[in-house]
Length: 357
Ligand code: SF4
Image (cartoon, rainbow, N blue to C red; front, side, top):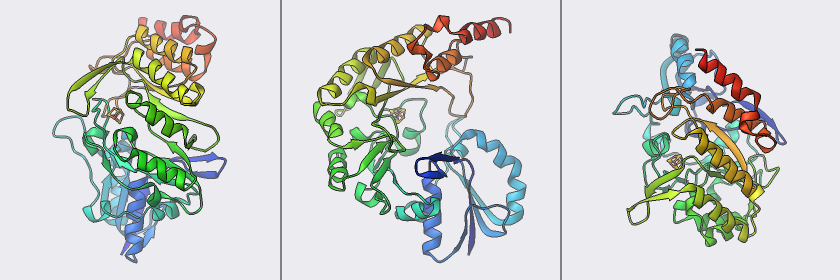
């Protein structure tokens, strides 16, 4: 059998380890390994080669239109076309349409094929999946469920070419095997990058000590970095007993940053993803910026887009407040450290654009 793989939206990026696809598509890696290990011919990257089956995977919803437009071309070259990935899923109306890999491929668990396919010199994958928090703007609980579960072990994800590992777990601290991961990271003397925002509400002195005990790094390994989320003013979720608990994040974040600091983790190593344009006001966004700035933490603003990929709307589907885009630029440029939002040119430019509409 001859199969093709079109990984439509992972971009080539250059870092200190050369030019690579920054985020390998793990599903494509499984497809590649499954067919290679069966002795099939795998064409990757696929481009207009006749094949028996063509797999197309997309992470981002904005690739959907391109795939739909080119579908006739794909069908010209392949007897069978299988399309999937988060960008292909449809969350516009219930029941959601969520694409899944064929079960025999989903069960295929040999990460070294992903490393071969993408020529990776670091390990990457999920040791756990799922997330109990259930934020309405996130696909993870819809795709993977509201209970964290084991997907792999650190040991299994090791790349023999490297001592660097990237874990893409969505809520690492919530799984009871987190400490086992820490022990394996130390045992193999790895540098470790947790790529998704960790849940700051779950930090305890034990977790803080565990994080400090490992060589946590950025994706490219160049600097010390730990990601957390500060997406909402009040975070509501079920605790271990099933009780719904509310967290006032303007109180929780400073308290947990202090806890991490007491364990020896510098606040400047902490980067907070900050969702804007979802359900917060300008005053609330400024309060979050002020809070993180005064703590000495880094901020990464994330512009909200809905689950269908639509941009410019808030949680209720109404147009976002005019301050949202200037707020993102003000943080991204680092000017939030030097001037107020109201002294930032783009704030008033945007205000005029929206007012004159
Ligand atoms: S905590 Fe993160 S992974 Fe979990 S549901 Fe919220 S956004 Fe998604």
